[in-house]
Image (cartoon, rainbow, N blue to C red; front, side, top):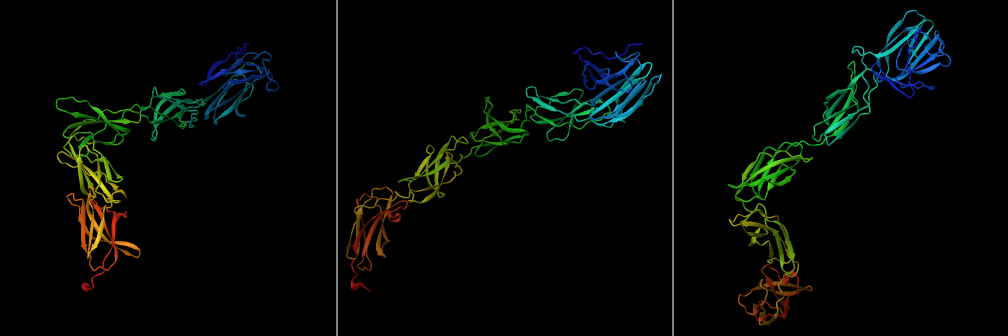
Amino acid sequence: MKPARRTTALASTAVVLATAGTLLTLTPASAATTCTSPVFKRQLFANTTFSGTPKKTDCDSAIDQSWSGAPASGLPSNNFGVRWTVTRDFGSGGPFALTASGLDGIRVYVDGVRKIDLWRDVSTTVSKTVNVTIPQGKHTLRVDYVNWTGSAKVKFGYTPRTSATVDKVKPLTPAGTAASYDTATGKARLTWARNKEMDLAGYQVYRRLQGDDSWKKLTTTTAGSYTDAPPTTGATYLYEVRAYDKAGNESAGSADKSVTTADRTAPAKPAPVGAADGQPGVTVSWNAVAGAAEYLVHRRWDTDGQDEPVVQVARVSGTSWLDTKVEDRLMYSYWVTAVDTAGNRSARSAPTSVERGDWAPSAPTGLTATTQAGTGVTLSWRAPNSPVTRDLGLFRIYRDGLLLDEVGAKKTAYTDTDVRQGASYTYTVTAVDTQDQESALSAPVTGTAPATGLTPAAVGGLRGAVNGTDIELAWQRSTEEDVDHYAVHRGVLVDGDWQYELWGEVRQSWLDEPTLYYSHEIYSPRGETVRWAVVAVDEAGNSRLASGENFSYVTVTEPLADPENTE
C-alpha cells in the first residue's frame, strides 16, 4: 500500500494555496480545529456511517487524495469515511459546476441538499459533473466519501461557469468605496472592498462632472484601488466603481464619491475690449468670461516718443469700468485680465486705445447746506476730481433754479445771507472751466434760513406827533448794511388786538444822514388812539413785524375831524 496523500500542517504555520482562482489558507490542525474559508474542514471516521467521534480532524485546501492503506493512524484500511465541509461567501452567486470522482462512494451536498450521489462499492473510478445555481451570499458545501474495500481515491471541485450564454448574474456592487484628493499633487485616490465572486474578472472605474449625467470610464483594474488625475479646474467630480465578471456581466455602480479639485486653470482672456470717451471719463467694457470672478484693468498713457509703463488701475466684478482719472486731450490704451475665484489670471486682452476729448468739468459733489445762526445758509461742496480738470475757473451757485452768485475755483464754500428768516431754498452748484464750459448741476440740497436772528434791529430814537392832520415821524438811521428800506405801519386796536396796515416806505438813503423822516396826512381823523410803527426791512424782506419780534412804535391820539370838512 502507498501512504496516504494528505496535507500536513506545521505548528503555528499557515500555508497559502490556490484553488479555482482563489487564495486559500491551510490552517494547522488542533484539538478544536477551525479552518478559515474557503479551506475545507476534514473529519476522518473509522466507519462508513460517519458516526461517533472522528479519529482525526484537520484542514484541507483541496479534495484530491488517494490512499492505498489507512488514511491516517488509528483508521482501518477499509470501511472508513471522510467528510469535508466549508461555508463560504459566494458573492452574487450564479451558475456553478460541481465535479466529483472516486473509489468508492462519494456524495456532494449544497446547504444539506444532495447534488451528486455516487454511493456504491466499485472497482473502477466513477465520476460525475452537475450544474447548479448557487444563490447570493454564504452557503455550505459538504462532501462525504467512504471506502469499503481496496484502493481509496476521491476528488472534488466546484467552479463558476463563465460562459456569457450561461451566466447572466451580475456581480455584487462594490462596497466600502472611499475617495480622497491631494491638492498638492492634484490626484484623487479611490478605494473599495473586494467582491466575493469566484468568477470576478475585475473592476471598472467611472467618473463624471457634477451636474453632468454622462459617465466616463477611466480604467479597468483587478486591484482594489485607483489613482486618477482629474482636470484641475476647481470643479467637483463624482466617482463610482462597477465590478464585472468573466461572462462580461457588470454590476450596478457603487455609491458615488465626490472630490473637488484644485483650481489651477486660468480663465480665457476677455474679448473684445472697447473704450469709449465720454463724461465724466473713459468707459472700458468687455464681454463676461466664464468662470471669472473679477477683472483687472490695466492702462497706459500713450505719449509721443516715450515708453510709459502699463499699470493696473482697477479691480472690478462687473464687465465695465469708468476711468475718471484721465486728462483731456491725451491718448490712453487699456487691457483687461480675467481672474477666477482661485486667483488664476488669464492672459491680458488685446489692447484698445482712445483719445480723450476736451470736456466740461464734472459736477461738484458732496454739496451740503447748513443753517448759520444770525447769518443765513452756508453751502459747502467738493471740487470735481474726475476727470482731471486742470483749467477749472469758478463755481456758480444757483438758488431755486436762478443764478445766485459765482466764486473762484479755489473756494468750495459760500454763505447765502440774502435769505428770509425761516424760509427754505433749493441750492445747486456747477463747475466752470476757463473756456466757460459748465458742468452739470450738482445734486440739489435744501437749506433753511435761521428761524430767528436775521431781522434788522428795531429802529432807534423813534418819535412822532400829530401836527394838524399830519403824522410826523422821525428815527435814527440803521447801521446794518443790508437794510433796504423802512416800512411805516398804522395800527388800530380791534377786539383787543393791534392790527397794522402799511402806509408807506422810506428808502435807506445813500447819504449818511443820521435821522430819517416820514410825514403823511391823516384822512378822516376820528379822534382814535393809534400806533405808528417804523420797521427796518432788509434786502431779503426780513422785518420784525413779519417775524413777530418787538419793533418800535409811537402811540398818538388823532384829532377829531373838522366838522366843516366832514362830508
